[in-house]
Length: 114
Ligand code: 5GP
Ligand code: ZN
Image 1: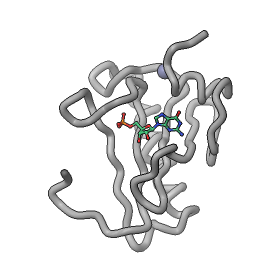
Image 2 (image 1 turned 135 degrees about the vertical axis):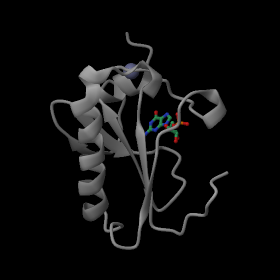
Image 3 (image 1 turned 180 degrees about the vertical axis):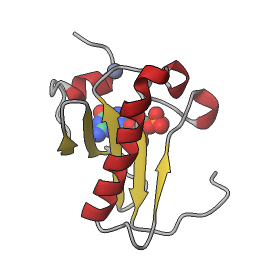
């Protein structure tokens, strides 16, 4: 059995509210939402952090942004605004070591972030 929770979600061994999937990427609702819209956009490939990617991953990383753009429209936060967050390592608050992009929307976000 895989130990990575996001690998298990991607493999559908663990249930989640999947809102998008293709052969490379899965997006699902965060279990502990920090905004009215809080989605996680995750590559199927297990990469622990952004520090672990190589130039081979460039198309995949670009795809995460395009899917975020698509989901922001679908979830009707594109016009008002939304925030994409990719936490890297402990100091930034990363708690799941499988790369994921947060898409947060439906409320006002402040700057600087906490
Ligand atoms: P991080 O802190 O690593 O940037 O974000 C991890 C996110 O994954 C958190 O927002 C957390 O709520 C979410 N999360 C952790 N475990 C699960 C899970 O089993 N299911 C879902 N849907 N989200 C999870
Ligand atoms: Zn994983």
